[in-house]
Length: 418
Image (cartoon, rainbow, N blue to C red; front, side, top):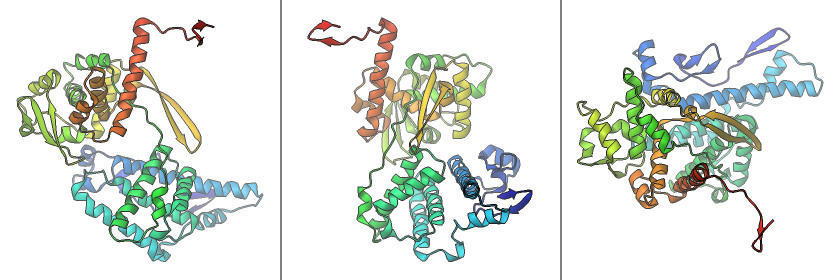
């Protein structure tokens, strides 16, 4: 970080590091680099050791937080009418940091324990699923540095959770959904430490994580059929992406399971596979759409031409735009109490996971019982599944109103229209 005051400049180390290929000198922020791009840049670089797209976003949020802390220090000087130099601004920033050489052993132990949790669970978890713990470690380090405090496992109680939540809202530039995920992860981690014999404060379990209901982005049946029947002759790249996505729409498989799908997983008219995320066996009956797509690629060694998740999502937006899937969708997020509303054409919001959501909602709308849909999609928690049921009820009302016209709403008291 370079500070500049009255044409005087000073360099300050932020304490954050990133591989050179993940740094964009123009935007001065970290950038995600795909496996294909790495091969072109330097084939000797180990892609698996580079940060994921989520970790890149997390690091950029951290950099934004550092930037904001420095600017707030400058504003305090100005508010108090104190003339300040670049050195004073640098000292003000440094005062919020705890020198790494003086880190309290209790802090060090907590962070080492997060590393231990990641190391022990990595073999049984999908790649990237533990990145949230790395993010949690980074947020905790920033919190402790900002407040200049030391903390032990037994100190992480309800008061700590509230203080940590307020810090994430004010200084880490992340929305309430991400904050809820971090707090939930912290509870999971503390529970893990307790089960491992570490003394913790039992009060942390009473802290209730507030979660915002997310929009459920799915395709309507008309949108699915438009995409399925889209003429893409001459564009093999988009045609293959379309086929894999539509396969997800009619089977409910996640990208990780589409990517691991092999010929031996297909038995007659069904797929038998162990889900990568949950490590549970799953049986998915093939319908006419799924069978047709598999038949199209019957000459290949692998059943489907699956590409990287990142490229897949990029191409899906291109596909959605070509198919005219451009209905405006309002997205609402909160940062603390601040409401942030944005509107996007639906194609901008299409990701590979929308295929799975589309399978669930269309199956429910076709009258398939929720229990059957859950068994096919691999959902085990009805509470999280319930939002799809709510979406289909709302869609029914919208579609009925479009087809038959919405009635004029009137108040009716004692059978008399007013």
